[in-house]
Length: 409
Image (cartoon, rainbow, N blue to C red; front, side, top):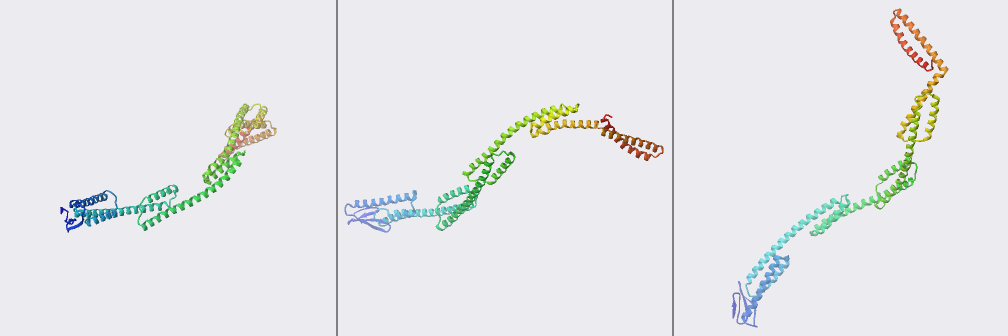
């Protein structure tokens, strides 16, 4: 018979293990010595020790699930409870019990962690839903669309909630995206319609602009081009593939017209500048006739100058008043000289002037006699009244005498 602190082998080869509840049969050993029997079952015990140690390490250092850990514990416990090993089986049970506590604690921690993650995921998804519903009302089509796509990616990265909660939130999230897509589609459909209308309008404007490009009716055509440009701006933008081509045609037609107008105006301006130079020379020639001496010669010379003046043509608008004013001044001087000559040489006019002067002189002399008589009689009031009348008659007489002098009288 052989024994050690945890087991023995009796005469029949039966192996026992000592426990707190007394000896338990481990097995029977007939093939060798009792020492070999104990050694064999002690090795089985060491195997259990190693297996428990490995399980403890896995529980501690890996993400072994609580379910799998408990299954492994139960498997080892069955072997321990079967008493098929010699050693401190109670110590193994104690280690297994502690391992169960550790697994239970881990299970609770993971449960709390999952609950926390689920709560965080719920809040995150609710926030995504709220933002999506706000974006569904946005008119910032590009930015809102990109943001909604980013929200979908964020949603996919979050853990699922319970089916009901997850489905409800996803329904709201999906509805918001659909509402935004529907509004955006309607907006761009309307925009496409507006751009098609703009294209038709601009096609019409281009056709008219091209038809006017060869016009030489400079003023009205330029005004019409300004009106066409206003209509162009009011029409809005056409589709991108049409807008640039239409604009290039529209602008090209204008460029043809305005380039032709500029060329003509430049030629006209050069011609008018030369005309101004010629008219200034003629105005200078006319001014040399002043003061008028020989009226007949001056009149003939001015007529010649004026004929050449009329043949020259237009001058620049801003220079016209000055140069024409110089000619008009000479013309007025000739007219004044002609009137003076006519009055001087007209016998009827001279006779009328002499008659009027005589009448006025007689009236003045008569008034002076009446004034002297009134003074002599002491009637000063009458005398003062007659003197005022005399002043008016004397002024008329002076004017008539001056006119008479022009006749050489």
